[in-house]
Image 1 (cartoon, rainbow, N blue to C red):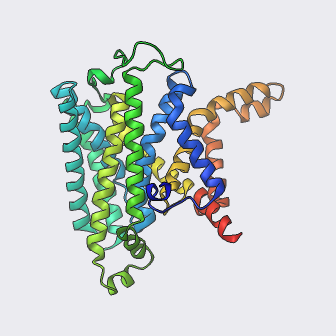
Image 2 (cartoon, helix red, strand yellow; image 1 turned 120 degrees about the vertical axis):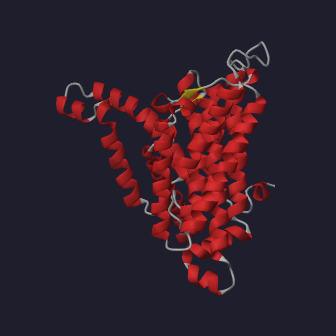
Image 3 (cartoon, rainbow, N blue to C red; image 1 turned 90 degrees about the vertical axis):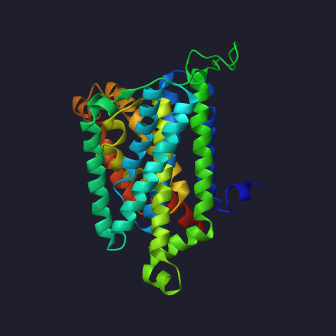
Length: 355
């Protein structure tokens, strides 16, 4: 049953299996294990970015296509829901209209971009996606009456997803079963389904063809596969999945802004997470996203405690000051790339093969 659920793609590493089970347990039980808003926000962010990074890996890791427009499709999903619910009101109908319109727009744009640029060379496609991403960011800023401009756009959710809504009056394990909890499990459940869908895709005949195109496009074309059609299809699929991630993030935050959705830092973070986890494996997105998000949220707190403990040594205390967390995070990233060139998942699986 488990093998079928994972589309026959088992972790193939005992250490990787343990890590994945720990992440799943954390995400499934976070509202009941931890108190406060921060741990729940970290868990929801991990859920959303697993979908976003895994969809990006469909392009880069499985098909060898480098796209810098992935954050644009993520932003389209977030803004689509936000604008629809701000305009039409906090209803399920508005949510559905915004989500469907965003997914349709993303698929159409990705189809047009791929159709125009994939016929030439990969670098041309990369430059085209970079240009489209920058243009979309500028458009978001200019259309301030619709998007909210630099301030972003806040909106309300349907009553059942608001903190004031109570599904049951009594608390369960010390946690209120309210609309905020329902929103989290909506994000978690949809993210899990999309993750399993991507596992199904990469382990299907379609996924094998994508890997063949990545390894040798000329050979794949020679044995009869229309590689352009496959590359256009995976671009549309990845864009739709990135849009779904944007929709989920907007629902969780009840806010959308240019810095959190369409900024170049978002695209850079996606790339870093994919590389840390390991390209060419959907499981790499789970590990890479979890390590990155947890480090981003808790490394500063850890360094603050360490800096206080080293107060007797002023030089070391300054070195570990929380304001320098990006320095240490960058060092950790460089070391991870050096010691895990194929990512954490790739290294763990390679160790099993060697044994």
